[in-house]
Length: 341
Image (cartoon, rainbow, N blue to C red):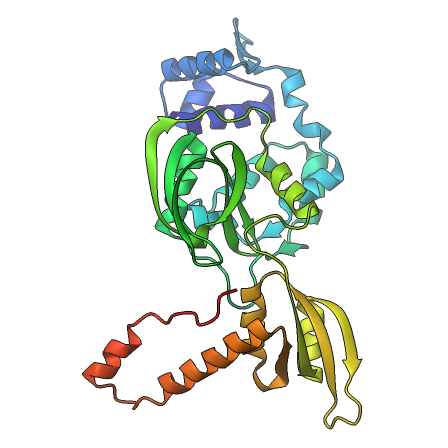
């Protein structure tokens, strides 16, 4: 592809400063005429690249442009080369970050490459949650990715936390992944809103383009929303449990504890703990994973949900191990959530 070749030309010149058109053509396995067309395309795009005539001439990249990589600060390099799980794989971008950084490292000055070598393999960021709640790659996410990149208007079928279904035409402005869960930031009429991608049942991308606000940055919007109390469609949720030492150790590692009180005379030791969760469903997933190590005390909505879920599980697993036709049909029926939250 031409775009890949243009990048390859820039990377080669970044490393050497000057190369003959013949050398570039040999490296990239294209004709010299193609190289000159690429140089014209880069120059037209504003890249300070030009051809020098004569026996010592060649294709030259301006020194000021080449010096940009030499001016990386050490913390900037560490930020670039910190390892992370590839959340971009959910968007169908597999391996792109790693290969891009490898190319970038190859053309950096020696001083910079040494700093990169010290950074690699020392820090890894895993944004996925341990259990439950992680969104999976979906057709909706693929369609939204294309709409965001191409500034195309879209119509979505969306179900909110209360179960209300709506259909709305939006301007998709950006996508955010938070602990493995994807969110869409979009302009709905004149208001910028956040939608959980998992709750978008259908997406239809229109041919019509919208005018994107020139100053809008999805990262800045998201951080501002978080600073204002997480103004997205996942409200924080606080619940109280009586829990064992093992459950207390678990919750201390992954959630914020608002208060805890030792239960006097309890054997084995137990605590009443008030825990702040990211959402109602986060509290549900954790309560189910703790099993007999924790008992939900309040609020009543969580207790009712867990009780109903327990009754459903008991009924489900009371079925014979060899399923008859009727029971197999029952397994395929969706379970209604008994308690709204």
